[in-house]
Image (tube, rainbow, N blue to C red; front, side):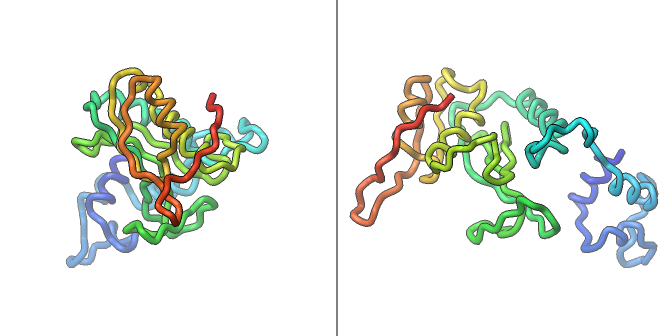
Length: 212
């Protein structure tokens, strides 16, 4: 029922949560009060946990507390759609202005402030098939600070289960590198992406990295 309430709030946006329970004739939504009482909703949101904090390992990933839910959602995403040949990978920014240690600011995005994710989508429908939440430098447990290494690691992680199937991936210049092109070519996967260039207009050199 709590998930139904979250979906309802997403469809019918109000500036404040208590407005959903208001009896003011101008803003009342009686259907919302029938789903769940305000006190019950507040208690759930105050104490909601998906993992036992005592079972978390030392120096755990920042997304560990929501990982079970995220993994379950991704498994369902993958079951509900057979991807077309063309797929795309890009960043997504979910609007969030509250307290969050990995909150990002991206001025080119519509939301500008929020939670950044790397998303693999079906190019024809825009359907999200896989997602990685960016939690900072520890995302995917990557210690290497090389930008091309990060981008390549993210692409291969998102493509888990899709290599050797003849897909064509569309990406922007942050992901594009000679190394990832070589890797994907060996795995029967095409790639189309813009190329980063230096001031002279020449493609930037890429350091060869070993991806496990």
